[in-house]
Length: 357
Image 1 (cartoon, rainbow, N blue to C red):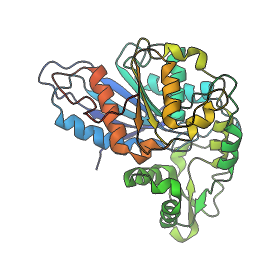
Image 2 (cartoon, rainbow, N blue to C red; image 1 turned 60 degrees about the horizontal axis):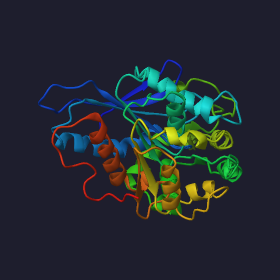
Image 3 (spheres, rainbow, N blue to C red; image 1 turned 135 degrees about the vertical axis):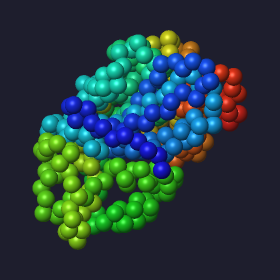
Image 4 (cartoon, rainbow, N blue to C red; image 1 turned 120 degrees about the vertical axis):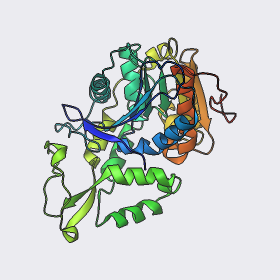
C-alpha cells in the first residue's frame, strides 16, 4: 500500500504528497517537485497507480541524484477541495490556472527550483496556461496527457455537448457496491486498469445522509466537515464533483492558446502523451483541422510546439489513456524525469518500447 500524506492549502485545495529521497551514492541535488493535475470530473487519487509504478522504478534505479516530491491535488469543486462559489461557468485561465498557481506556491515554487507538471485533460490545459503566462514555472518541463488545446475559432466546439452530457450524468447510488457494479457495466470503464477504477471510486465518491442537504448546489461549507453517516441504511453514495460543477468547467474552457503554443517546447521539454483511438482531440480540432485520429491530432499539436516537444502515442488507448494504460503512462513520466532531473549512467529512458511520431 502506497503511503501518502493528505494535506490542504490555507484556501482549501486538498492534495496528496509523497517524498522519494535521493538514491544516488553521490551528492544529492535539490528536490524536484512533480505536480499532478487530474481531468475534469475526476480526483487527485487517480494518479496513485502511476505513483506506485514510479516508486517501484525509483527503488530499482540507484542513480537519480535529486529527491522527488510527488504532489497531486483536487481542482476546485472536485474531490476534497473547496466548492466553487456558485459560478455556472468556471474559467480555466482564472480558475483552474489559479488553482495550479496556488499549488505551486504551496510547494514553494517560484520558477527557480526544479519542477515538472504532469496533467491529464483539464490538468494538462491548466498547466499549459500557467507555463505560457509564467515561462519557466515548470522549470523541468511538462508531461501533457491528452490536453484540451482548442484552435482559434474552435473555442465552443464540443463544450455544449460535453456540458449537457455532464448534467445528465448519474450522481448517486444506494451503496458503494452498486457504484462499482454500475461502473463495471459501462463500456468506458471496462477498458480501465482496475487500479485506476479503484482510485476513482476511492477519491471521487462520498457518503451522504439521505436527509442531508449538504450537497445543495450553492453549498460553500468546508470540505473537512464531510463525515460519513453511521446509519449505513440511510445513506447514499454520491459524486464529490457535482454534475453542475463538471458542466461549468466544460463551458468555461476559455480562449485558444494556439498563438502561443510555439513557445511551449522551446526552452523546456514537453512530453505529449496521446491515445491512438482518442476521439476527443480530433473532435476539438475538427473546427479548423482535417484530423481523423488521436495520433493525427497529437502530431498536429506537437508540430506547433518547439523542438523540445515529443509525442508518444499509446496504441489502442482513448482520451482516458491515463486510466487505461497506467504502466505505459508511468513509464513515460519516469522517462521525462530521467531526461530532465539528472541521472548517473542508465539506459532505462523510456525503454525500447517508445511509439514516437
